[in-house]
Length: 122
Image 1 (tube, helix red, strand yellow):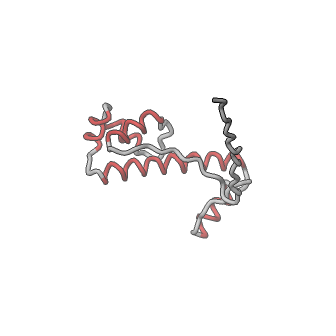
Image 2 (tube, rainbow, N blue to C red):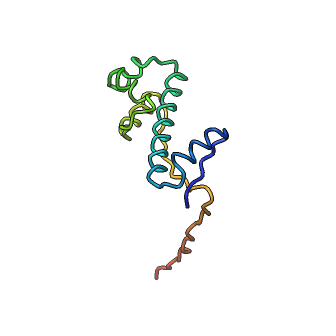
Image 3 (cartoon, rainbow, N blue to C red):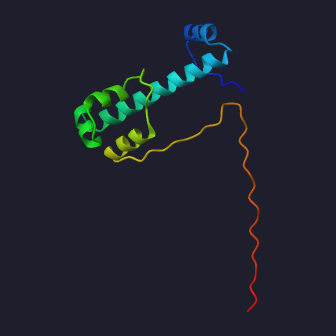
């Protein structure tokens, strides 16, 4: 089931419908761009909340300020789990990855088999 994006502005809704609409390739590209922008924004917010300049975070991570700048750019597409983990460690944070169900999907839990106790013969 296709996910409906929460767009509150009528103008943005019009543009989304016009340029992305029901095209699965366009939706996938949009979702990827949105994810890149969210990662970049989160990295920026975490760094500034920690009162660190890009140079200081880079030193803690073991890279350069230009790499940190690139990671904070919404157009950057090369975020790696390894680098995100290094940044989290440098900021004394833990990295969590979550897989979310698309809206409108019902979550189903898989029932666990009851454990059977086997009694030993003494």
